[in-house]
Every structure is written in C-alpha cells, then in structure tokens.
Image (cartoon, rainbow, N blue to C red; front, side):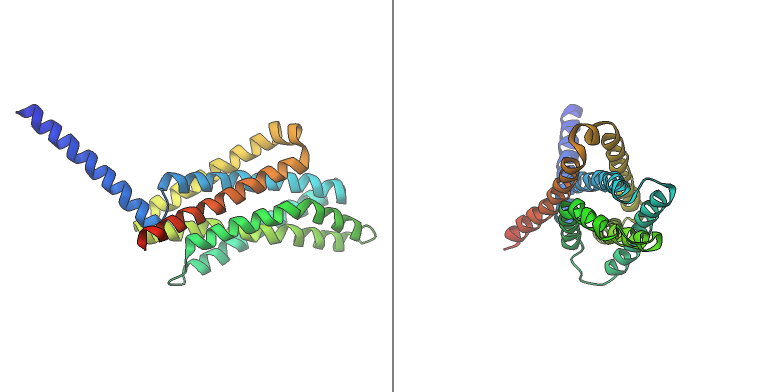
Length: 229
C-alpha cells in the first residue's frame, strides 16, 4: 500500500514538472534550454567578432597601442550604450522583446558578413588621413554592431522577467550563459578558429551563429502563433 502511494506521488510530481516546463515554454515563447543555448551562441559570436575585427583593423590601420586602445574602447563603449538602449526599449509596454532580440541577432550577422569588406574599404579611405580621423573612423565601424550586441542582454532579461517574475534568477542565468559563451568564443578563436579557418571563414562562422539564433527565435515564434490559431 505504501509502495503504491509512493508511486502515485512520484507520478504526480513528474506530471507537475512536465506541466511546469510546458507552462514556462508557453510563457517564454520558446523552450528555456533553447533560449539559453541561443544566448550562449550569441556570446560566442560576440567574442569571435571582437578578436577578428581587432586583428583585421590592426592589419589595416597598423599594430600599435593607439589602435588597440581605440578598438577595445569602441567595443566597450558600444556594449555600454547598447545596454542602455536595450534597457530603454524593454521598459515600453507591449513591445515584442523576443522578436526584437531575434532581429538584432540577424542584424549583427548581416553587419558581420560585410564587415571585413567594409574595413578594407575604410582602410583605403583612411590611407592619407591623420591619426584622429583614422581613430574616429575605427570607432564608428566598431560602435555600430556593438550597440546591437549590448542591447541583447537587457532585452532578454526583460522578456524573462516579464514571464517568470524572478529578476535575480533571470539576470544571473542569462549573464552566466552569455559570459560562458564569450569565454568559449575567446578560447576557440585564439587557439582554433583563427589558425585553422583564417579571418574570413571565422567571421562567417560568427555570422552563422547569429543567423541561427535569430531564425530559431522566429521559428518558435511562428510555431507558437500556429498553436494559438
């Protein structure tokens, strides 16, 4: 009799867990594990871009302390401003945050696909420019995509908080997986991708990660829309 009660209790708990997972998926619009994987890939691509673009720009504009400072400063500035912009957008009621996140990932990938050609053109354009003009051009080239990158964390945090109502867990989990992805991206870029693939194919790898993230968001969004209809 006791064994039957234990079996019933276990079955009930399993059913509750499955139902809970289903509710989370419905609320988020995408399975939680898929969302965390997407944001991990986003972190990997971001660090791939940073190392690839830094190497490409140093090749074009010269390898010196000023060039490194401008590239790193532009990356950090773009992430910071982008975070503010993403946070401002996330406060607006009724905004489809997950859809915007998907569009941002695709926009980053689109920029990444043409980035090396753009940097090469910029290098030719700035060949006869002074240091200030060259630094300003480099800052602009990096600032555009990093603004988009910086907006992704507050957009996803706001989306998860709106559905789970758990601020601490949402922030810590998303920050963890994105930072984990960034660490993986830095290691893989330094010791594997850049050496084996070179700059061009490595940047296309980063582009594919962004496109995969964005299109996956659209897939689950469309799937949820079909279920609702």
